[in-house]
Image 1: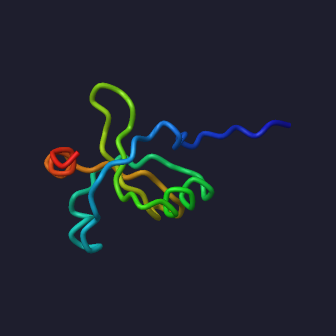
Image 2: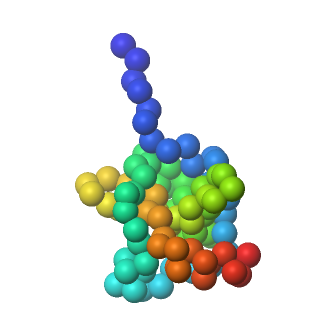
Length: 89
């Protein structure tokens, strides 16, 4: 029996400069849908100095990560918040 891993492959993420704001401010910047990641991926991201990442592609979404919906997820920033992060790269 094989196990299907449907979590996002975090090795495709590009680290970005920038620090998250406090919880309440940061959550206002988020936009669903969230992208599930594994516990292992969460801990790998948590143990880096980066708070933000960019997904691959020409218009790659800027995401942060955290605990959401009973698991762990990449959480996309809304366009204005993403632009604010990208202008400091």
